[in-house]
Amino acid sequence: MNFFILDEHYKKAELNGIDRRRLQERIYRYDWDIERATTQPVGTKKMDFDRKHGEWMHIAEQNGVSRFTFYSRLKRGWSYHLAATKPPGKQGNRYDENGELKEII
Image 1 (cartoon, one colour):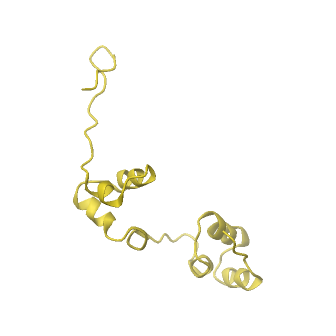
Image 2: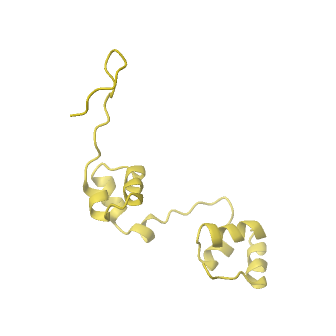
């Protein structure tokens, strides 16, 4: 990201209880916009599911797909539609009574 944090940003953040290190982390590591990074109080968590993924997160939940599974699928390159609509697989027991790995059919 080619953004430089100015002194005015540091001052604004400081007024909101955000130290320099945390401001830098929010901007450069977490890719927050400057307004949110300088104003959101420390210790609050803002869920951005709707802003980032639109209705897909809600569709996934309606289809029995957990948030973890949905995000894992997106990270692996799945489309939003497939990640939200394909039912999760059954994990089951992968080992037999002797502790041997079962053959996957």
